[in-house]
Image (cartoon, rainbow, N blue to C red):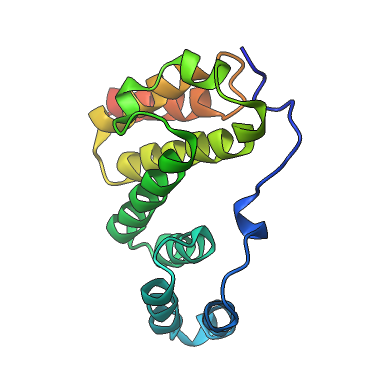
Length: 167
């Protein structure tokens, strides 16, 4: 099994430049966050570049920090779909197996890590939204795929189990 930490970081999503217009919109959103006017430029950026991970990450962060978890979840799911296409994983995360990682070309490991971290984000957001069974299934899948816990799902599963025990 490939170690998810031992790789050359290549093809990082944030190294893919968007058009100057989209970059400008993301910058404007960042500068206007304090005034609460960030959403419009982010949505404009999304309409211009719906498959840009830079835009999706910015939108996800905006919604998360605004405590708009359902919107953050939708954006994370969109990002997972886009990343999955690049690495030729099954369309259903439940069907991803360790062999999808171990048999993948070494140059796709950066994208695989991004996929796994995005899936972890989806699990976390579902936990926050009280979708506890789905969240558990995601964390258990991540643990099965990542026996060294490089993605950090074990701790989240422990938090989830504690939450469930308190219900």
